[in-house]
Image (cartoon, rainbow, N blue to C red):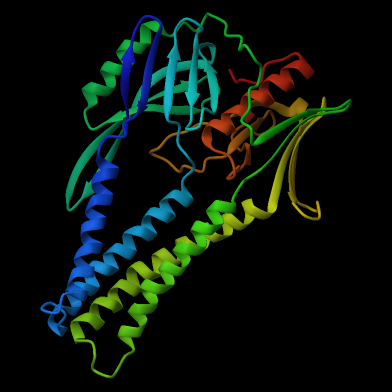
Length: 362
């Protein structure tokens, strides 16, 4: 949850509230796992009548751990802070680890509230997101709450401070993270990067084993005809495997595919006076596996947005003059939203230098 942290005439800061939700979640998870351990090893409880309860505790523990892994694998790292710098007329978008990019106030078209309905157990609640919309149509969500008044009050504080007539000139043009390398040659400007997925691969192996262990045991219980397991345990295992096992298995396969792509490929962007090109190469052989090319004269805008109420894996869009309703989409799974915003700014600034015109939309 992103909330208002501070406000003054110089700057307004919004940041993710760490709170106690994560600590509470893992505490509950630990209690559930410990309960299964106690039931298994305390002689007085180690009876067949306790078997379904023990299995339920351990199965729930495994299920929650798998959900944690998959959610972290599917979602890119969301921005940790939005700093509205009123002195320099810019929004500084920050991620964990000090990675930062920016949105000049000149590019902001409006501040607005998006309402999303959520239904649970037959009850419908409304959640509110405060976001800024840029002139190119992209949107960045920076505050959210279940209380509409809280979000609108935050926007009311910001509204008078957004001076869109004041220019912003960054101290260092196109600052980029250490993951992304920038090069110049006589014909083109280049960006290239790889995703450091080694530690993620270790996580993937561990949780894949966990998935196999949890649902492998379910299958063992279902197809065991020796009478060791009561019918209640077999029914529970069947539904757990049919519902959760199938869904989580599908999602886990998607995470594996994405991880392998990021592990064995490197990526590049090339900007010349006539063409913008995106490439994917194999790390070892250098063989090109994919490419996209767009003529510079046909480009009218380059945009990227981040809204947590939509898909986290939104593409960087290159909007063409010939077909503005169907932009060229570049999915950069190996970069975080803040890093993709860095790429957007670099592309806009590089093209502006090479052509003398703006690519920020109208």
